[in-house]
Length: 445
Ligand code: 2IT
Image 1: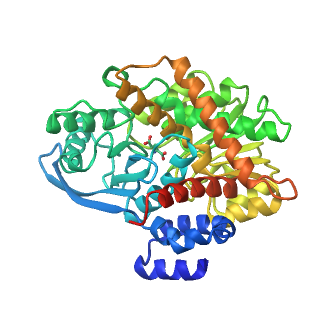
Image 2 (image 1 turned 60 degrees about the horizontal axis):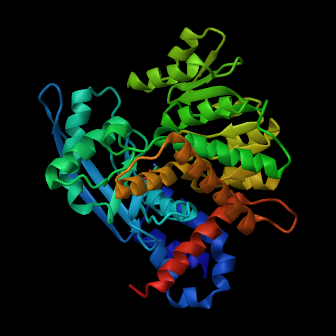
Image 3 (image 1 turned 90 degrees about the horizontal axis):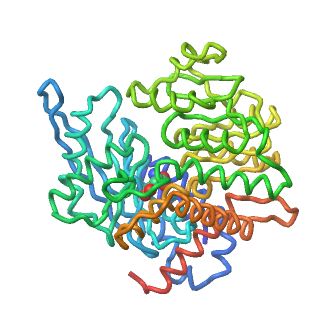
């Protein structure tokens, strides 16, 4: 495989889709060597097939706001790859959403889902609709209008959407309600549902909890322990909330959270009722963290800045893609941070990742670290198919096993001759090999 040739042909076909091209380049760089050891992959044009989504649905979403004005947004569903199982992946509602971002997310999801050990393909969807400042009634009307288009293309064995940024339990509920109304089936075609209508216990916590189980294993590999460690977390949404909760429970101290307005440094740790307060901040719909420092005066608010300038042991980006730049990485390295685990999807830029690996910082990519979210969605699909509901302990035990399997796959495929574990390489090769073999086994199509 000539990576430059594959990339330049993709750039010609999809000019300006920078996040998508970034995600593809990362995977190709990691898998080139193993790919070249498998001439049968090259013959079947596995790479060329894998980097293009199977199909993309784009639709107009029209709804009426509280003032009676008609609003238009764009909706998308990118069905990327179903070699391993039904398309599976979240829906993102955010003003920044475009096709490049959803294609990068769908591509990443394909490998992440492969790593979970469960039978799920990769997909992603969303809209440029911004939930910021919208009333509950507006959110409901938007979700219903979105599903009015999407329902035709999803199903329990076809494509199973869930939440992502801007889509939580409330939005999933409104979308799934409309889905059921339209097709008159309670078939569990979405995950992240509330407990009362087919949701799984631990699903709201799963991304953050799973990430911390992974981090525990990362540290154990180095003969280290999370207890007593200081952690910088970015974001303050569902994922950050789960991560802060579990990190605190495991005896670490989380000293930062952040929003689009800046970050909070809390020397006493974000713990106890402060974790509940994160949920309150989020529910306000304002998308700012500044009020935390008014409520807890020991904390300092740093407007317009990111938490990566603080001296800590572990960094956990939990906000969004490319939230750790090359310059942030320089700060992180200079501060002596030993571990960076992405909980957001593609949280670090390529410059940041190169700097971490060069400096010997242990870095793990989102597709491994945050896979506990979609894995628990997979467990929700299983419970729905069996028409039963598992206890929290059962789900949590399965989540533990899955995260530990993912960690093992990273170590197996990512350990360098000098002993450094390149988790990015390990995750990409393990995910790639599974998808590639599944595609090979099902013929050319
Ligand atoms: O990025 C992700 O893995 C998610 N947003 C969760 C997807 C899912 O189907 O639960």
